[in-house]
Length: 104
Image (cartoon, rainbow, N blue to C red; front, side):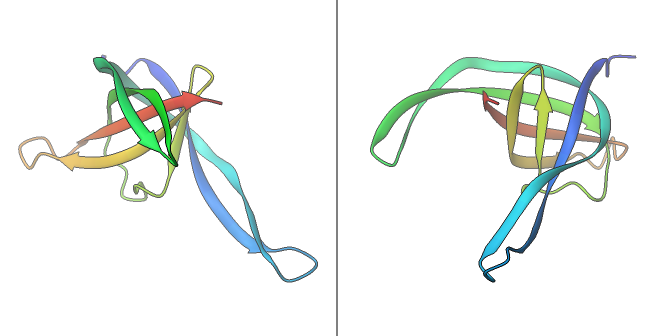
């Protein structure tokens, strides 16, 4: 098939530290296979007054009802932030994720 790239699905697990302050960590909740396609190279963005470039990616994955934009993926040493999820009613078994990448 075309879903040949191996990704790790990461979910934020929140909690509290010994002082009662909010804390948490990203936890690997499993491997997913996907097709990963770059979308038009790097896009300039400004965050916190800093100009930088990010790579935008289109990730095609089997539909997973637990997946949200609050999750992230790890792929080839990069962290992929999920910007949007798209499910086409004509192909309900597949979800297209619009992501941006950054170094791990």
